[in-house]
Image (tube, rainbow, N blue to C red; front, side):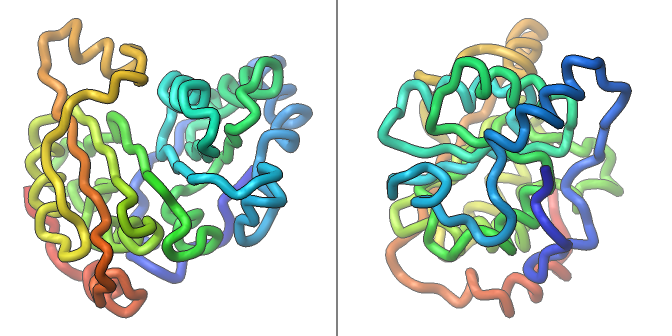
Length: 247
C-alpha cells in the first residue's frame, strides 16, 4: 500500500511525518498483506467511480491513527466517500482490519504520504473536505518547517478542495495552533477560523489524552472560496515552499 513517488508539487523533500513502523504482530501483517488490497486504492490517479462505484463528495483524512474519526465520519455520512491515509503501519493495519471486517463500505485506507497522494493522485477540485486531527506537532523549533500546516502544503490542499470545500484542523499544541491560524488565515483562497467541535468525532486517541491532561483543543475550519487564485497553482506552491515558516 503506497501513495506513490515523491510529489512534484510542494516541498516534497521536507517530510511532514516521521515513519514509525516498529514490529508488527502476525495479525497486523495479515491485515496489511491479505486484507489491505481490498480496502486500498488502485495505483495511479484516483477514479472515484471505479473505487466506490459512485460519484459522491470525497473526504480525505490525513493521519487517522487507529481510525476512530475516519470510521465515525464514514458511518455518520453514508452519502460521502472517505480516504484515510497514514504512514504509521500499526495504525493502518488496525484500521484496515476493521474496515475489511465490518466496514463501512465508503471508507478506503492508504499507507503512505498524504502530500504525495494530494499532489499525484487527486485531481484539482476533487475534495469536499480534508480532515487533519491532532497532527504531529513537531515541537522543536528546528522542525517547525515539517508541520503539515505550512504554506506549500496548504497551497496544495487548497488546490485539491472544490469551491466550498473545507479543511478541518484540530490540535492541542498551542504552538501548532498559532502557526495554523497564521498560515491558513494568510492563504488567499481560504476563509475561516475557529469553529465548534464536530459532533460526529469521538473523543479518543490524542484528543482523549489532551483532555485528560487539561489541555484545550483548538478547532479550525477554513473553506475554499469560489474564485480562482494563483496561490493554488503548482508554480506558486513551489515558490511558497521556500518561505520561512513562523510560529
